[in-house]
Length: 271
Image (cartoon, one colour):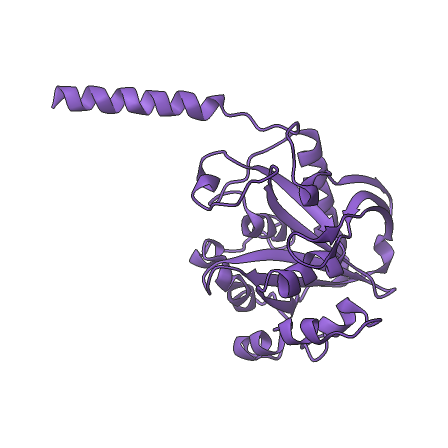
């Protein structure tokens, strides 16, 4: 018994030592789609974002990289939409938030792992400080279309019920998160620091008493959680919102010259 206890103590000590020796870094050989960190400059209503991703994806491995500098006027911010992309069954989804402006343009934020060249995502490895986190800001025709068309994921979009005066707070919270990660690298964590928890943490800035819920862990049910909290457009049941928010058929049928953001929102409640 003493031998077993000693072995466990040594093993725990070795693991703790290894754990704290793992340090996040900005200096690795990054995959193309996460090679650039988002940089933001804010001056009143004017926000300039450098390294907005706008890749042209033909397949997951065939693409034209494009990083852009874009300027946004927060006084023209009108909407925010929740996007869920299912890639491993109904319980787990990738969570994104997309902001719409008066000129009809959209910008999507997504917290992701910062993959190294040749690296693949593993939820298990995500518990053990194996991935850095990156906040990606991207054009919808890049970050949503690659999921619906190139990767074959099931993608849903929902209009968030957020008063106009709170949209600015939400948008700037993402900007602040990007600035924080640009300054100090952090690890992505499958449980505590992921694409869904960042949305929840930011949402608490405008609704401080949001309750914890199992659907924050099972991210495939996050839209259902948002609906239960009054966070989605009013007047519709969740099932109807989900059915009408499914964008894949529209995304794949899009014709040359059509606007992707407009096409995927056709028939979606509140849009």
